[in-house]
Image (spheres, rainbow, N blue to C red):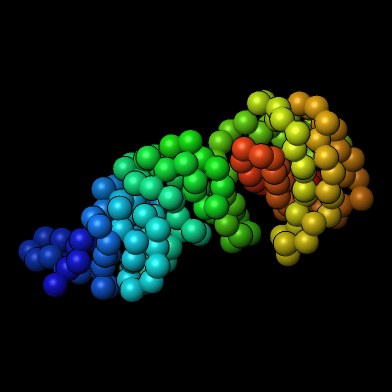
Length: 191
């Protein structure tokens, strides 16, 4: 029998693995990058811990990082990013006020950010990069390569910070901003 989530093939219902379990099932479903993403009030997906958000690849359930700390009511895809909404204040271990964005970067590394207060330009960049934090507060900046190594680390002292990246090799990097309120990660391409 299906547990809180099932698939209709035109004539019959079938379960998606062992399904979902917890206080309640799925409140929202959406396809994203060839997989089915599910949000709700469940705590287990396919027998694995999954805190209110998970994905189904056609044969296996996987959690989305550490999930959310409360109900997740809705989800949609906009400009190639998956957005979730609900009663949560934490998503993926980051502060998030009721909305969060999930993005799977081209490198296969999961790029998770909770708001759009970070601007990076130019992107792609050659030698110099400007980081703009729209709702500025004392923050730390890291530029991380595709292997997860920190290449640049500094404290942001203003809303706009210029960073010399001429010593970085060409490739894909991730700009990570950390402060008291949130953690934001965005992809950077170095030409």
